[in-house]
Image (cartoon, rainbow, N blue to C red; front, top):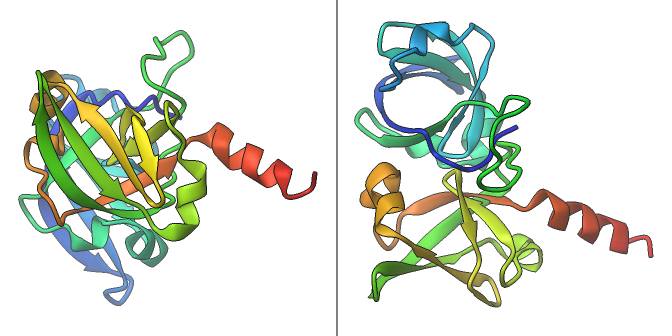
Length: 199
């Protein structure tokens, strides 16, 4: 489990096709000083997608992504040099500063616009139609792994405000209209919607 509070911004260092080219191994440079302490088999959220560390180096970790992951996230579009939001898993006793994030991407959204608004930036995103009902004003959503509060919703479009600090320490620094984003809906919304199907 994660919180959606990004602790580092990494970079894709290498991509190696595996599984007859349907899967891929990612090598991601990460600036954590204690990266050697990450055990093989540990989970790392990579722009919102929970991946398993399969190798550790002095300033990098490797993770394998299956064809299923590549088809349901934007990871398949990554190239060497792509920026990656990184978060290590929540430990018992850690501060829960964002919201509960599973690292299970529900779909790929589209970045529509970014507009300066006082001291922050208002970002608009469009999600696939089947996810729209799970996003509510003042609810939580993870965009590329970043825990955000939804400001407004209009059909399949929603808006959030990003403060300068978040821009500086995440991939929002490089995001532009037209870019894909990994979307994870709020876990509570997912289960409430499922329960109402049987009400």
